[in-house]
Length: 92
Image (cartoon, rainbow, N blue to C red; front, side, top):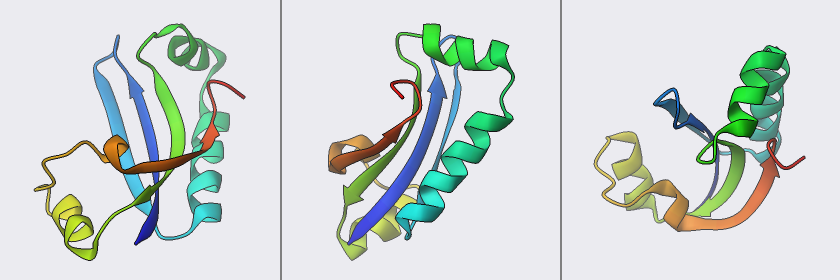
């Protein structure tokens, strides 16, 4: 199954999130909306953070892996299923 995951993370702040979408357009729109909502200070915080991430990935998972993901039982980082970087707001 192809899915799209919007991931944002700042190591310095120690916070982040992941949101999975079925639709590529919705995932990109969510990332762009969130990025555009950030203050310049917050954007710089992501850009300066060497471990900072603000991206949408195309991932390929089995149906069972998707279920495990939503149940919080997927033992592998979602980035390990990456097929393509759809958008990377830190490299745009």
